[in-house]
Length: 351
Image (tube, rainbow, N blue to C red; front, side, top):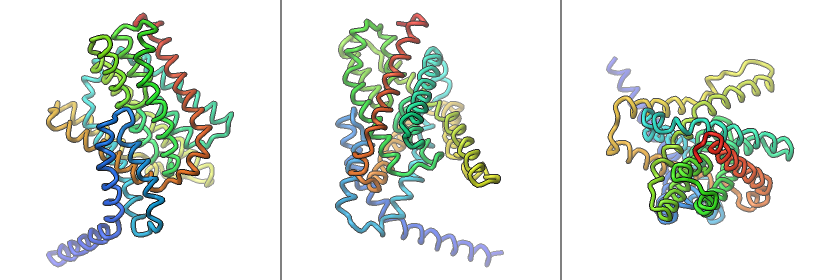
């Protein structure tokens, strides 16, 4: 028995060393890109660290011609570390607080998510846009930008260029929304409560939601930031049913394509279950911000690392050439979501 345990330790040690040797260079490269991208994201939150990381990664793609020794680590970062980021995101979700404070926004959230997914599906069919890009843009627009794309991409087996396209589309409309929504809300005569719901349901990414809400608070001397953030976190919970449905749909498609049974276990997004477990732990034990805040920050940093890896694997010339249709889709989703958010507020008498 002792001999068996000794041999097992040697095997595991050998596997660990092989893993480190194979992946370390690519992981370090992504880390070196992620650190300055992280700080730039803090300085310019309306752009955000993930976008800086993708742009820097695409530059590195042209600087380093032979990436063979980095390839395995880059792939590990873009796939596995991206999933770890989603899991850690769960520690920022106290389900009791979110459901208590966010229940008022649920009808609006359901309406806006449905609108975005329907629009992306229709445009995908009409313009013959690749289905994976359409799914990422539709989910990213309707749920929570980069986090939703990070959660969905492994489930539908999207490649790095498709992820980069979707992130860049989401980024474009995040910036526009953060810049014009406070003025638009004032022009429409929205109340503070109404603008919090509008920002939380109609802006894609958390950083842009907070930027728009902070701008509104500065103009109106109000406190909508917390309300907008709670609505945004409530939207984030939609990651769970969306990814599970997409896993089931992919399984059915592959069964038809292969003419037999395909194991759901092979496709099932188990990292989403860990995301749910993290949220449950946070809720049940009412974890202190002292614990959850560093974990949320680590989640954001892991997403930036993964986006750096995705940028390295992305051909910027091809990305620009193929961006027109996804941008049009993103614009339609964005306008649809904003319009439905305002319409639902009017119907519910919140405006």
